[in-house]
Length: 93
Image 1 (cartoon, helix red, strand yellow):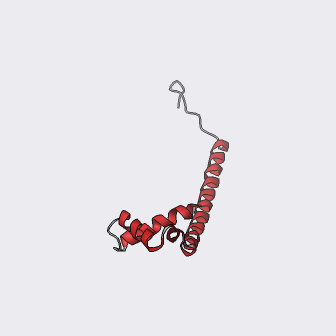
Image 2 (cartoon, one colour):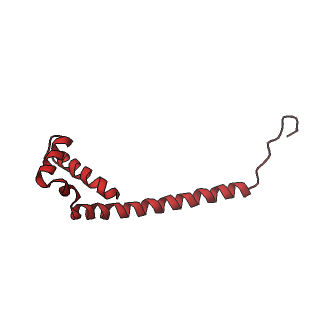
Image 3 (cartoon, helix red, strand yellow):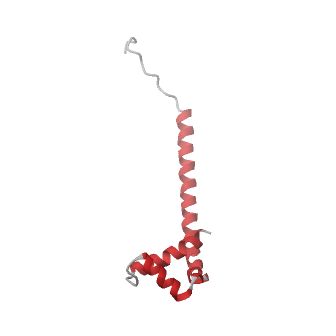
């Protein structure tokens, strides 16, 4: 689903960055004139976007899970470790 949103935006961005269109609106008009609405959702474009998005999503999820486990482990260790009680000013040192 996200690829269907990103592909048209990516096509417009690439045209502007490559100097093929002076701005996003001109790129949009040019692309629409070339192939209509279906031009924005060409199967090759969507496949390429998915091929880029899936590895990114997998790596992001793995990093999130690793960091989450690390933080939870650190919190558990901190709760189990004895905490020194601060001495009150009345107690001799």
